[in-house]
Image (cartoon, rainbow, N blue to C red; front, side, top):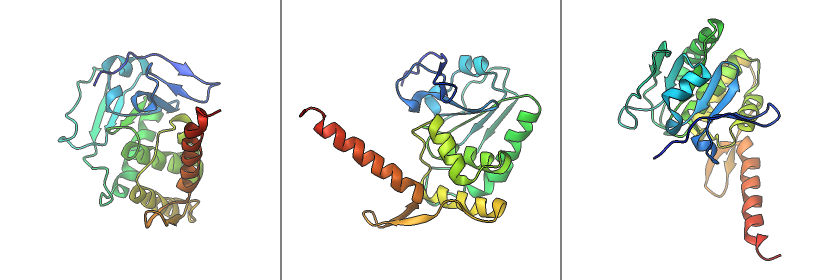
Length: 211
């Protein structure tokens, strides 16, 4: 897979990405001044240097992704060896990674969190950080991150763990798990609207050429 050269795109200060790819899957997405999110394809030494990244959190197993070459500007490199699976306990890492991101920020550094696609595992860790240190509810954090990286979608199990984390930190949940009758599984209620939007876009595409 060939990764694209880094450049900056912005949309009224709302969305900032750092590759020239048309797909968010290949972009580095800026979440805060000190936190970035991406997938494996965007891992480039020149991107790290351009963004001033000093800490990298890798949420993959070594079998999925070997350690990437890192520039000397990276002071901290952490691997969270987990799979994007319904049986993975990601909750056990939420506090520790959130604390590390906060510590790096206080020291004037910047953290980049990634997994394979920058969709599920790494997004979940970023949501936990925003929930703990930016006084956001889980619903607010998810909306905030999705606005900046539209492809995010933690798996259902990770979202349930994030709900548990929110209850631990805020006392009450802002997101609930609801039954998806089509798949006979429980999904976050936030995904119900996402599903409706996807269905609407699919319908629009089907009829686009008939008018």
